[in-house]
Length: 109
Image 1: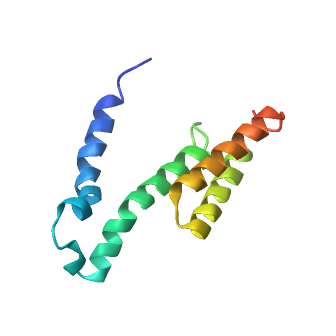
Image 2: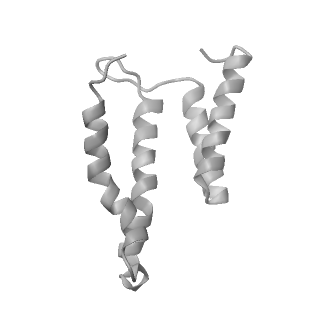
């Protein structure tokens, strides 16, 4: 196990935490313009979507290529569940269960 990515994780936390914590810490956040509140609410899900797209839909080769398998299907299922329920946890759980089932029955590696 290497610890080389820990400084990057700390840096990313330091960069993204203020925008995620602002709605909890700032009094009167509801008085901000609607577009600002929408931006602050969607910054976290947008970052998660970008991470999911890069890590689940591209191979690690040089150059990266699109991944064909159960992972893109799981990401699409997650997006559908989140769009339907407006909750992130059920979507992530649905994706994890889908991949686990596919691997258990031998469809995915």
